[in-house]
Image: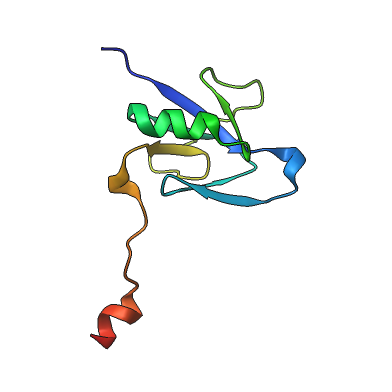
Length: 93
């Protein structure tokens, strides 16, 4: 089994600065999505709002530290999707 990594950003031509797909927020800087499942990879590749590459783009800047989330290191699994309930909603219950 091969490990797949995708490099994704919002299409610069759209004028959008941020876009959510598959529970992941993308912006105009390249973001590395490691090991997405087959369905997630297919959905991301089909999304017209996103630019997707399977190889590091020429203007890709790798994160400076392992914990740096500015450019990536996101796993493409639903476990990384934003939580459905906010802290305020939880406190109200």
